[in-house]
Amino acid sequence: MDASTLTGKSKSRREGKKNKAKEEVEDRISRLPESILHHILSFLPTHYAVGTSLLSKRWKYLWTGISKLDFNGKLIGSNIAFINFVERVFFGHDATTALNKFRFSCDEPIDECHIKAWISAALRRKVQKINLDLTSKLLVVFPASLFSCETLTALKLTALFSVLQLPVSICFPSIKLLHLKFIDISCEESVQQVSLSCPVLEEVMLMDCSWENIKVIDIFAPKLERMAIDDKDNDWSTNCKIKIYAESLVTMVVTSCLACEISLHNISSVNEATINIQSENDISYRLTKLLQGISNVKHLHLPYLTINKLSSTKDLLALSNLKSLTVTTSTFVNGKLLTELFCSLPKVESLIFTNGLDRYSHEGYDWTPEAFQSFLSHLKSFEISNFYGNETELSLVEFLLKNAIALEKITIVSSSALSADPITQLEITTRLLCAPRGPMGTIIEYPLRP
Image (tube, rainbow, N blue to C red; front, side, top):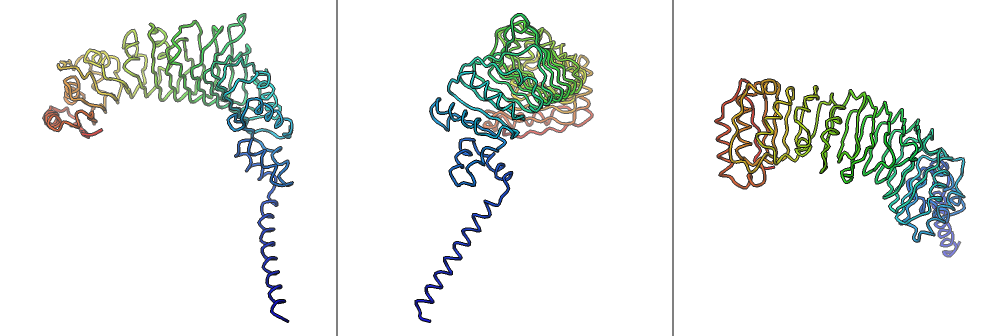
């Protein structure tokens, strides 16, 4: 056998091995079950998932069985091309495949009839999660089937300057998460009262939503644990009343102008709440009513301006189970307000000021311990950040050191200005070390830099 024959056989064997290896690689993918391939495709925007149909015959129709439809207008180009693409996808998609998620994002205006049709198509596929992000002005009229969909577990709707028309009665039997942003919510003028029932809802967020032609909306959510309302940019007072029945509520954040009256009912389990009221109007009544609804709260965050909106700090006495109060944006808190707080927080164990006290104060305050006996007998920890070392702050620390009989620790975090002034730091440290202490021998933690 000559050398050329041997060389030919060797070359043939190498090519055979390459082809076999290539086939094995191809077979590893092609042998995957369709359910696995569908799962892989579900991580892609639908535009790219459909594009895999060009890879081979094996992939030509795989996308039609995916359980997630994610349409992003920025990936497709013109508005008309985007509408045509979505229409083709819904036409070609397997209508018997249940959708885990339907997400839609578009910056350009789209006729609401298209949106309504696409949502209806998703609902017919027993969709579980809907996430719509519309930034163009639309009159959004959702199909009636949305408000009673039995499979829907999450609804996120961002619709800038859009109007969401609600039926008189809404029931989301399976929804656990509800986020509404930048929406004008309305109903028929002849009705003006809406009832929303969410028996398993766990989280709700209402951000920059306004309520048009609605006098009362009742929200029944017995399993609700987390709630956030942010409408600080809407300071137009209305007569709308939002009544929330949520006996399982644990955490709540309200950043609002209280343009609407918010009342909480059957709330007994709130552990932590943040109430940040920003309004030029007199909303003391609405603020007091809101606080009365969380009378069992244990940990509360209140900015100074919110406290200042109360008709009286004695409204805080309604918070009978309050253990911790954090006063944010506290720069302008002075001795007078401190006096009122001490009288209104008889059982608080932890008091925190996150932004120092009145930095323009040059005089100390002479408090009478007998006037705050209950407060001084319960307080266990005190913290002040952005500490300037002015007389209001120093007088308060000295007063607590001497008279708070249960006080265990004071934490002081200096401001950047104080950290840059070592001479003043030394003077303050010496003064506090020499200050009289009560029976607990309170520990002072004084990190000199923030």
